Image (cartoon, rainbow, N blue to C red):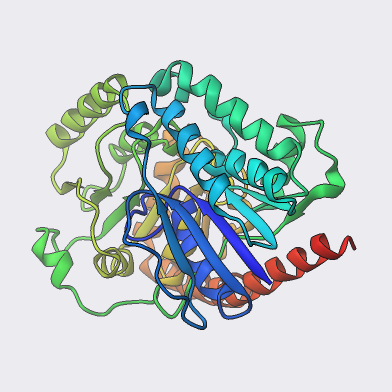
Length: 389
């Protein structure tokens, strides 16, 4: 069986959970079937297929669309990808960036199309602030790709419910739940502290860490308000790039200025750190916080758990399927800074409890979210679709 995975993100150009998902899924699938990855961006020619490894094809943006709305440029790349997947037995697209490419490729080459949903455009209305008319195009593209797909994969039961609500025309029998995963051989506690110390984070004080893009979805404003109520000794480490809109950037800057005026130990790391550095920072944190207002699963929570770090996260989307409330961390209502602060302070006040939750989180990540199992489930779905069972 030859599978074409269609994605915007692929290493080294990974900036979100969907990219992490495709990276690890492709590696595990390639042990079971032939895999071609078709991703956005300029790359060296794919070369010769090596057994057990995916063959990667890059698709750069069309220069004729360089000045167009970004969503129009995406559709141009989708057309390139659809034309390039000849020879695949099945195409598997990820996110709205590639869903339309998958549907067009399926029609063009007469093969089934499976689409994995990592988020849904109708549940992210704040993107209109960022994309303008491009948000209407991204929403149309996602709907066109999902509505006619042979199967739609939801990365959590919460996401399956969201699909049914956002797109009631999709037959529930065509929606399958296959979770995101985590590589616990890569994400594991790191005893070294060199990166922590190099950033100036005090080793004599506990710290709380956030990792994510600065969008309305990730709830950073809620965290910054909550942090004002953290125990005085707590530090806050933000692994986050620039805000995606000027308006949100101004809001975050004002909250940061207020927080830094009231307490010390507030660190912002804007550059994308190497994975090993992130793992070390997760490993030594007193808590990882995920204050998202919308999160289909939240792969960062799995990464923190694999590093034996307790998680405080919003009880939204698929997060309750990952974070076992009271066992591997705490779930809190979204957009409530006091509830978030109270949960973090419980961990800061009881390091023994935090350590116990961290150990339980790692055990849960290893037992229930392995990429090997996820790849096997995915191949079984491919086979069922191809054979019509």
